[in-house]
Image 1 (cartoon, helix red, strand yellow):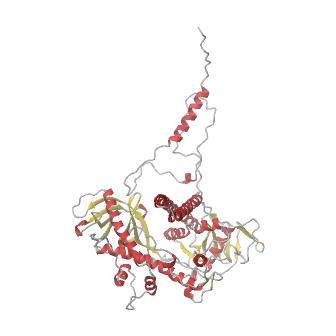
Image 2 (cartoon, rainbow, N blue to C red; image 1 turned 135 degrees about the vertical axis):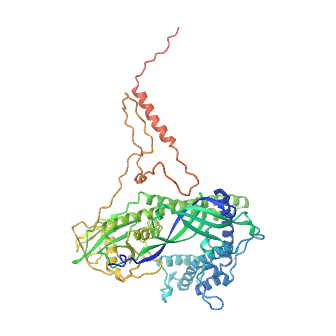
Image 3 (cartoon, rainbow, N blue to C red; image 1 turned 30 degrees about the vertical axis):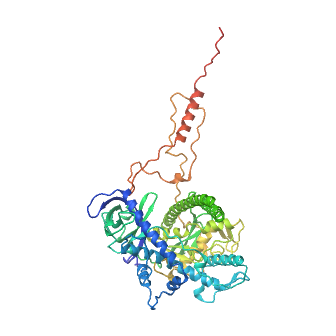
Length: 623
């Protein structure tokens, strides 16, 4: 009996989103409109955002990062993990406009978010300082690290080296200067949100009963509250998503308040109990290779008494055209960024009246670029969970207990050109790994990270370098007589390393198990089909939503009317006509396209004119 079968479970946190559909005043019980709730939440977020930006800008100095890196206060005591407690001990207090009253629990939210941002940038400050100390302005190269603590990822080191080289060229001197993050960049712009989990019950409370979440939060009643009476408690009612009703959830956490184009959004978190992962059980593993052509490809390796076998037939994920759409949005966002940067340089030396006009154009470009970023984030999330669902179904059909993915900390895209390298580097791999780990846990499969070096270049059988007889995407080993798609061969290597190193996996809290040593054992090609055939939805060639013209009885249609163009979105099943949208204010049905209706009617009119007999008309005779 394995550990998972014995009933041992471990807690795991996950996130979800929902929207309130009702609101009442906590004291009087009077209903409050959702538009008013959005306005009051906006006042709260404006107070928090302004105070947080002011505090981060005031603390943007090297002494702040020295204190956070050391982790000690002025008396040598260790700094606590809570951000608001650290800020209170160090005397980092935000400031508000004169005459505005803000409760102390809201101040906790401000300081917790500000300290969290500064702690995240403390690592970057330490890395920039260490790299600038190793940078040689004469050769414009970085010296190798001397201590283990000076190691930083290679991609980050190259980016800092390019910045230091450009700085030395502008200075036109070979002075050796140790830089800090405050010398390299300006204070970051923080996201406008309110993490209610940083406060206690005096600010907000949560209760979940019968798949309904009730959030009690204190909100301002005026844009500039002047006293305690201008803050009142409001009870927000939101529905729990249906896919969480059957989950073994033990704790519901306070959400984060965010405003988007639809209104108030609650970003919630919960803790559930999941079975303990048992890596020693199971004899089949799936390897997932990140591909530059698509998001990923998978292959299967099975452990038998006579060794490791695989049929070398992998599964390539079909992104339904989302990858092309992401590339287009990425190029559009970069174009907007370059255009805004050029207008910013022009506005720096322009006259006052021209500068005002340019600043208006820059604001429009920034808004468009932010909208493109939001759209990319939504597509990345959809792509990640769609990819995770297909890979988990593939692994479950093969009876695999382990899914091996490439370690993203050692993976770097190089050698494919500037455009392809940038496109692959900005793909949703991190989101795909998180979605894969979350989805696989529900199916009883464990996701482990394995070393990525050599998986696409070495033969799974003899561990020798593969040849490329058919180009970049093909791989062949003349010694073992095995080969095929490059990504499928890499998936076989990843699955092999996951099977061989699963008993030596390193576990860290909040991370997937890691295999840091790449062991080798020959993988024999098996003629038996060991991998399942993934189900592929068929594309519907005609959209059911487009109205078709009904031909009249007795009329011959001589001209063939072409069907509407097929789309990659036709693989998605249409939603039923009667459904309930949870948490939305309004359900709007999209009207039928006027262009498609007019086009179909034009075809019918043309057919009628052709089928009807022509009448001969003669000109009237002159009298």
